[in-house]
Image (cartoon, rainbow, N blue to C red; front, side):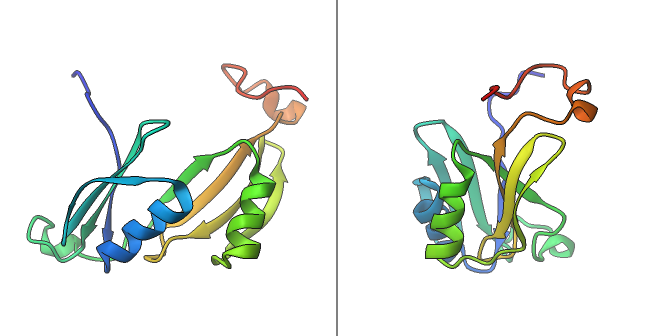
Length: 142
């Protein structure tokens, strides 16, 4: 299989509200938009995300519900600055406060208007316990 593209499509109660959320807080731009679907792209990095009305005819009826069991990870350079912007200033919901994990992340968890969890992460050096489990060096030693 030759995969040419891969991106999540989130089912939403309010496509416009959710699209505006990702555009405002995460720097996405609309590349296609109708009332029931928006395709978003973050031009600098080329990341894509789409939002679809959960009641649209292309969604099988038994699956037309809120997204559950999904976390969107956004790896950033300065998680503390993003925390200040999103949580302290913008007052987005905070589901897990900022903390360091011994497996190599400093992160916090918020959510979008539809309740999709968003994990904002900075990669940090892991503890010795987890260091040996990495197949490649993905952190920068400070």
